[in-house]
Structure formats: structure tokens, C-alpha cells
Length: 258
Image 1 (cartoon, rainbow, N blue to C red):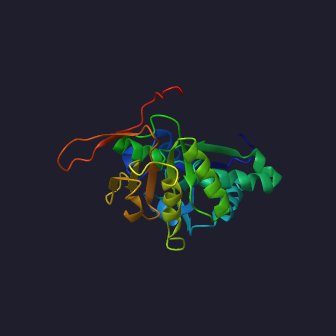
Image 2 (cartoon, rainbow, N blue to C red):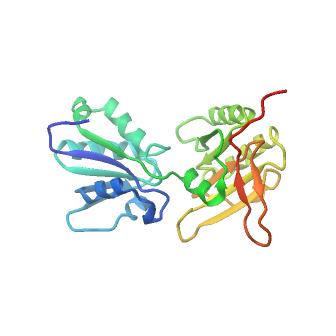
Image 3 (cartoon, rainbow, N blue to C red):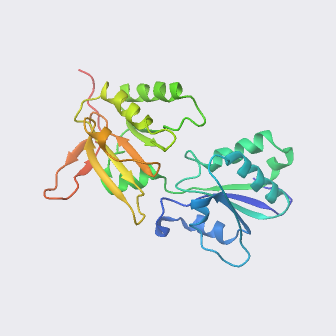
């Protein structure tokens, strides 16, 4: 998208945390920015440098943050909006385009680009082996922007369709019960031995990964930094012996119905 103001807006995925996993294109967009906008923890990941103005804000103000970024870009500034992981997966890209659709018509002519990043489910899957090797889906358990009934209806549908399911935003201080409710729903549909993987802060210093079963997963610790993967009926564990975590994979092939 191109415009004539001289300003620009790059919506950038910072990846899971390890700077080595930041794409070259994302790094170049950050290097060219004059203004950096995002949630406090994500802004803090970007090193300070001369000429870069930082605008950090709290969570749950995504659309306001997007409007601020668009207004700065419209004034001629080179703006970077940052998200952890990929900006198009439960993150800032959708908020920016929502603001564009409902905001100043001039914003539609701005130079807006999206720089993808490695999202949490891909980083977690890489640590585990290949749990997303066959059909899978991603759901957010946060009910800040959609009703819980919608979440459970969608979760039940994909569980019955035998997808591998990656659960984002599984639990928080404000809603400590939702992951347990989601796992209870899964337990009514899938076998108790179904692999469940909990990957916290993947690639960061406090990374913690646990492989368990659906029968035991409700007792496993989790927080907002945790990505939960519920395996499909075909998801396999390859034991490695000792204290080594098993490899996890989901075969690409599915047997035809008898």
C-alpha cells in the first residue's frame, strides 16, 4: 500500500523472544523506524537507539494503540508497531486494519506493511518435534473480545474433527478457570492418553516445556506465557529414555475410514 505523506507504518512480529529468530526483514523495518509503538514487554525487547521514540502502553488498548500509530504515520513519521510472535496471529495487525476500516479515510492510502514473525505455536512445535505435522488449528481462550460460548463451540468442533489444537492465552489472573474448562471439554471427546504439551516462554531464559497426557494436564502449571497443544488421535510420542523429553509428532497420513 502506498501513499504520498512520506510516513509509513510497519506492523512487525518480534518472534518468540530469541533475537536470532527475528527475521531480517523485521530487523530492517525496526532499524528504519522513528517511532516504536506496542505493549510494554514487546517494546522493551527492542534496543534503544538515537532517534527512536518509544510509545509503550498497557494491554487491552490495541485499537487505541493502532489509531495512535496511524495518526503518527499520517503526519509523516516512520512508525513501527510491534507484537510478540507473528503480528497477524491474535495480535496487532488485525487491530491496525480495524482502525483503518473505521477511521480517517486518508489512512487507507498510507504505506502499511506487515512483517511476519515466528508465532508461539511454531516455536513450541520446533522444540517438541513435529506435533503440527498434520491438520491443526489455533484458538485463543481469551474471552476479552468474544464470548466464552463461542470459544467452547469452536473448541468442541475442532476437537471432534480430530485437529491438533494450539491454545493461545490459556489462563490469566482474571480468568484462572478457563484452561481447566477447555481441558475438561477435551477430556469428554478425546482419549485420556492424548498427548498434551505445555510450552512456556519458548526461546527465552525462563523457557519450560512439559509433555503430559490429557488425563494429567489439568494439574500442570500454566500462565499467559504458556502455549498449550492438544494432540490429535494420531499424535505420537517417541520415548528417548532417562530424563530426556520424548519427541512428539503427528503423522501426515490419515487412514481412510473402513
